[in-house]
Amino acid sequence: MAEIREEYVDYKGFKTYCKIVGENQPGKKTLLILHGGPGCTHNYLLPYAEMADRYGRQIVFYDQIGCGKSNIPHQEDDFYNYDLWVEEFYAVREALGLDDIHLFGNSWGGMLGMLCMMKDDSGVNSFVINSSPVRIATWLEEANRLIKYMPQEMQDAIAEAERTGNYDTPAAKAAYDEYYKRHVTGLYEKDYPQYLIDEVEGTGECYMVMQGASEFVVTGKMRDWDVREGVKNIKVPCMALSGTDDEGTPLVIKEGVDLIPGCEWTLIAGAPHMSCVTHPDESMEAVENFISRFE
Image 1 (cartoon, rainbow, N blue to C red):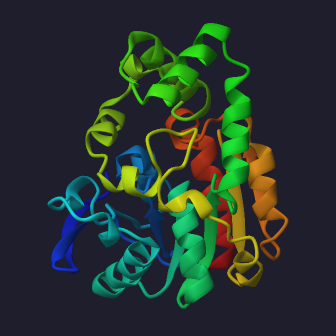
Image 2 (image 1 turned 180 degrees about the horizontal axis):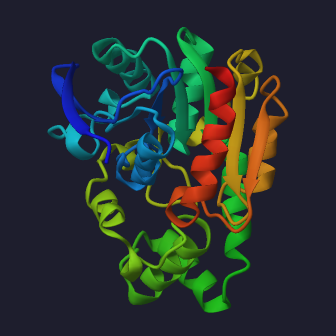
Image 3 (image 1 turned 180 degrees about the vertical axis):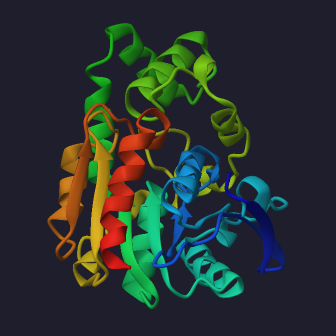
């Protein structure tokens, strides 16, 4: 089994938690993994740690500031913004000596990666964008379309929860659990492995600040997210990775694929948003097959 090291990087007067798995074999470069949210943690992406043993490649995770083991005391809303996490990306890389890497980002992590690659792509050899929108309005339109395939009583329960802000009724919980099973985690909450339980428990307050109360409406700072023009200038070799059952639907992903120069696309049959949870082998193989071409 690959050795696991944990380090903390000083950032903004706080500590960013980093998990380093394994060492690079000759000819391999480190894969740096960015989690989603904003507000999630690295935990749900831990299946990718297996790449260290499987492919002899060092895998590095970190919990973005305000999330998981990088939790901080309550901050005013203006503390959280895109630049906070963009600057952290470069701070972590500098502190850990990650000057020659591959990059992977899931959901918001892919969005963060896009911002970073539009700003300064130095030392990044390839970039896997895992189910990330270039325009939030498209994402929301598709998420709300997916609801319409659910039983009517669940559609009604979600609509009621969104209207009242009460997501804790039994009907609402059952409806959201069904949506997450179909399109996000691929599992009902009762079947979550420990790393997904840890994920849920580690969610930071910044999710409400940036996203909002649920997956179906963005009331936070990301409500105007639209980088369709900016991504046209990304120069790093990119691959989009998504699933056919993903809340990041093929329509969402294609919008980015069509705009990012030379972007490839791997679509995993039956996979949800967190494809590594239900389709770990296909996900790892797709990532390794792409990034290994750019060593």
